[in-house]
Length: 169
Image 1 (cartoon, rainbow, N blue to C red):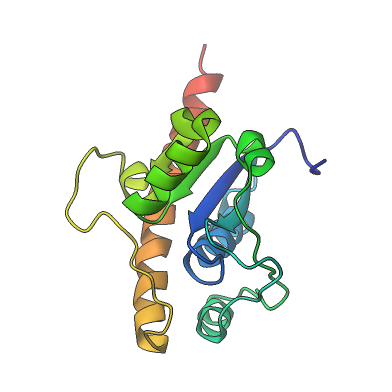
Image 2: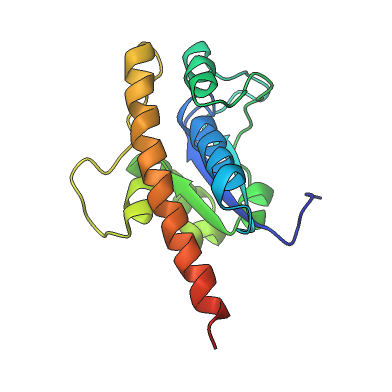
């Protein structure tokens, strides 16, 4: 059973859980801890084709170190039904990952969305996926990190609005 059950779990999903999803999890956690500790969200990450226990890529580790976050202890984990059921919100990096989860885990359909579209609260936008940086080199990782950090700030802004709306009566 997970700790902090009073918190809502946001699950970031990519393919291998060694780059994008772990970076999104780390960035979300860092921004929440630094500026929005009142938000009751717990980030997590997984991959649709993850090798359990695999570490984050060297480039992801280096990128996150540049953000003041240590992900050296990260161990990849595959998506599974229990993880999806426990999550309040599931955000995938690509349409293929979204479609996989919806097809393989119908229980998660209503809470699974494309990361970028959900962060910006749009139904359509150009460049709506987070490209896989695996094997692309550090500069590409840094570009992805910068993009995700911007997207996560938008996501947190929407989550804060939802929390504030729920408190007004």
